Length: 432
Image 1 (cartoon, rainbow, N blue to C red):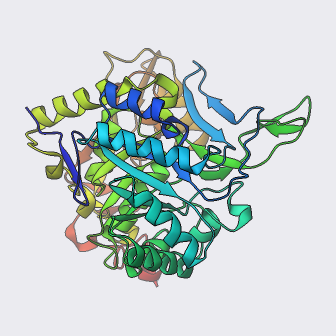
Image 2 (image 1 turned 180 degrees about the vertical axis):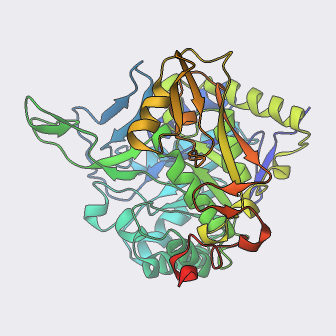
């Protein structure tokens, strides 16, 4: 059996699945239920020092659904915990004492003054918690107060606060990064420069999820008013994967441990984050959609796949795909593939033909020998993969590599002569 046990910054947990800092980790009752269900750890919902945090009592969430009502994305306008600091600290103490084999990390957000951080770090240390996560990612409410993403968007602030925290605590310090920035590598580099032990990403994406066209109010609507919030869920996973990979393969941040966050809903999602360089994953929206027992599917699915693939431990997966992420100009432009339609699986819906005819390269015919039939015209196919993406039948259309011949786009023979962009005829500079 695969070993799912995890060690992140010396923090041990029975599996690499932690609940992210969010509503599911706001109180002892929730966290205990999560541990009873089998979660490996939690990041306690963000604590602060302000006793006047007030959350809205109307809708806090807005959602985007697929046509079958599957939750694709969730927007929230909830702030950090509005429960008294001491109550949270007392509950963290009890939880860690009663569940010593589970990871308990505490998310923190206070103003950018050294004394504020020093004071709250000492209080968290006294609980016996395993580490702290500095919330530099929240894009709403707190950012307007000079915290959250307002800090995470300024690398100098990240480095400064990370240095303070490393000076004033022996606990591992994780910096949670905001995706609301142009280049994720800059804040990650700043965190490392500041001495942070790890980074976690991504936090939520600043967003307005929808507008009620009857009331003309953004959703979720509070008394006819709306605000931007934080977007999360399956829809943000591609953005999160890219940002994790950017940090994992950056020479200036290489080696810094990463906790991957963003749309983890299935074991496969988790495996992808691990393969791109994350050492563990944090989950929120999936638990809020399906409940804590989704952990059973996550752990069993990951374990089964690891057994089938020959991976003995979680560490065996970490970073396996990172070397295969390249800048575009380093891709092999000598590689050619073509679409192939399995006629036994084809249901004759015609979607591949319509999208290729209307929006791509007119490479799929709809009539063969006077009959309705869809076949690929190799001379016109550029291997774009659009037909595979829109086909409603899984595995009906596949891409097959060509090993010899002529690139129909350029009439250039497929050979090693054009192995990179600088010499490829498609490159305008090369043509000159």
